[in-house]
Image 1 (cartoon, rainbow, N blue to C red):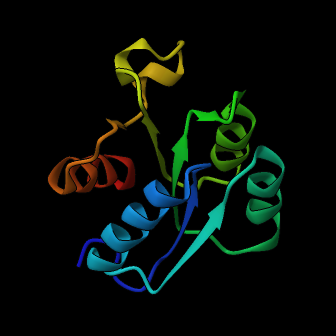
Image 2: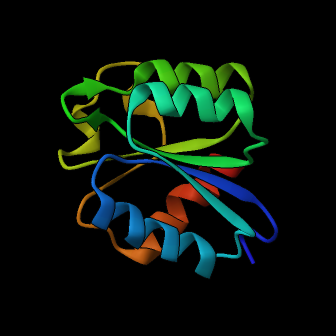
Length: 118
């Protein structure tokens, strides 16, 4: 399995979307899925837990999540962005990161994760 035994962090402010992502991550083999709904809780989760991969919503209730992405990058934790807008519209250098657009398709999430992990 792609994420066999890994711990994932879902940074997402909408509970229903977080539920969908958690289910996808478990189907891809994650042993544990942690959640963060705010930028502060995301930053704390990266500090407090061993995370193998993350999915990061670009907009957390009006707050951009780039500081969490920076922290993930500095810790060499692979991640993908997820957004309601076309990921190609993200600001550089973020638009070069693997990303998926809501609503999610399982195969596209899996492909983005493969790209992030490679």
